[in-house]
Image (cartoon, rainbow, N blue to C red):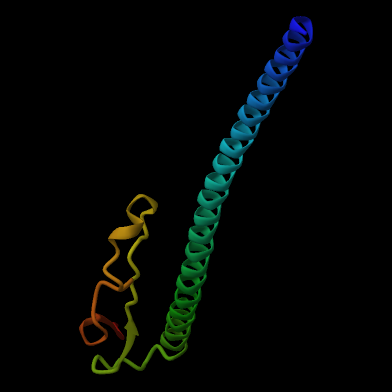
Length: 130
């Protein structure tokens, strides 16, 4: 009976070791999954910021192309009528400025991406010069 008891103790000991190893492996898998989830969250945040920056750049390019078109039209009108020199005639070109988004200071935004209130935005005036 002593030999039987010894074999049972050895078998339970091996089973306990196997269960401990299994729990250790499951804990390693859990840590790996948590690390992957945090990397995925970080990648998602970076991608969201890239998309926001791309959208901002698209808006800036649209505004710039509009201003360039106005300036080209103004220049064309100016060169097509050389005898016409009216200093009081002017064309206002609104100045739009957006603040640069710094990726390291994401949480420090004041909620507005514009440095001026709409009534405070400067307007630059182009005048015909002869």
